[in-house]
Each structure stands twice: as structure tokens, then as C-alpha cells.
Length: 308
Image 1 (cartoon, rainbow, N blue to C red):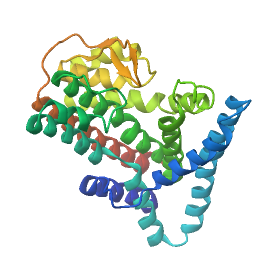
Image 2 (image 1 turned 45 degrees about the vertical axis):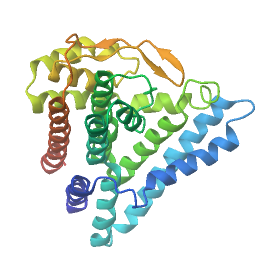
Image 3 (image 1 turned 180 degrees about the vertical axis):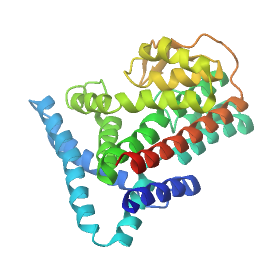
């Protein structure tokens, strides 16, 4: 019991306290290096779809297998197991850093003006930020907080609940693959197709669970109705659910056209309230993110205690 529950609680507490210190070596950097190594060698010539699929299977399966065997061996050393597993949970979560990086955008916008806000936003989103106005910047921040609450916090916790640290980091490898090679451009559209589909499948339950937990912690009927009305309208099969929940909770509107990598993308609107988004809305979104994470941790602990 303690080999499962203690690392979860300690890792979550460390994320709340420390976030993601830039000076600390992060395993996701190793994931990125491995993905780049494979991509440079196999994303060329014929059979790119097959090569990309095999790369994803090898990296995800290899991550799970190495950690499964390692933690299986470490079970004979409970204290060392708990320390290392706690570090794994800590590195696997990103709620503190998500809120902090989002706050840096809001702070830059307030203190240094529009250009500073655009530049700071460019560090956390994929869209072109050079022509965004203040409302669009604030909207992008809230969209990012909702979407990344799902795939950067709740989904890792979900897969920790299913498979411990090996399950968590197998998911993180999928997520890293998706962020690096799952683009619909000439270079990656064939090689990254399998990684994109795998990420979509693995996030199906966590995205919807995230949206429901967001509604629960905010007690928002509007958030619940927005999930069913707008969740499926997003281009992504998953991102629309937490985004629609937050749009309903804050009674604002997300989505609309944006420029990605020089190309205009006509995204549907999520929500119908065209209100000005304020700093107060940001702080309430930060509360929703944190409370949702706390509830998810509590649910996992109680589920383990009473069902396992």
C-alpha cells in the first residue's frame, strides 16, 4: 500500500512546492533526445508510416518495460523505492509550472504591455502570437491551462493509477512523441501519424474525466452544459472537453481562427459569452486547476484503499 500511496502524495506535494525547476535534470529531456535520434534516422525514404509506428511502439514499450523491471527489483528496498517513485510522480506532473508559466504571461501583459505579453505567450503555445490583442492573449492562456490540465496533470495521474510510475512514464513518452512529431506538415504527417492517434486514444478518458472534475470543483451547471454542447466541436477529439468546461465555468468564449506555423486555422468557437477576460478569471482558473488535481489525487488514494 505504501509503495503506491506514499509516492503519489509525496510527488504531488513536491510538484506543489517546487514546480519544474529549470536547473533540475528532467527525464523528458532524455525522451526528447531519444525521439530526435530515431526521427533523424528513420523519417526518410519509403515506409515512413511504418517506421513512425515502430518508433512509437519501441519507445513507449521500452519505457514501460525498463521501468517495470526496475521498480519490480526495487520493491525489495522499500525506502529507496518510495524515494525514486516519489521523484517519478514529481517529474510526471506539471500543475505548478503550468499555472506559473501562465501567470508570467498575464504579469508581462499587465506590467510591460502587449508586446511583452505576446512574447511570453509564445513560450507556451503553438499559435502565432505576433498579432494577438490583449483579449486574445488572455484567452490563449486560459485555453492552455484547461488543455494542459488534462494531458499534463490528470492524464499522468490516471495512468499512475493504472500502472504506477511505469504507466505514468509510458504515457509521458506518448505525450512527448505527440508534441514533437505529430504535426500535419510535409515532414511529419506520415512519420508522426501513429503517435498522434495513440495520444488521442490514451487521452479519451482523461480529457472527459478532467472536464467533469473541473465542473465538480466549481459547482458550475454552465460548465456541465458546455461540455455536452461544445466538447465534441474542437478539432482535437479531446482538447475541447476541458476547454468547454472552463469556458462554461467562466462564462466566456474560447476558440475561433488562429494562425499556426504561418497557416490560418478556422477553429470553432467554444462558448457563446463574449466577455472581457480579466486577471480575476485567471486566478479562478488557477483554483480550478489546483482543486481538480487535489480531487483526482484523493480519488486515486480512496480507490486504492477501498477497491484494491
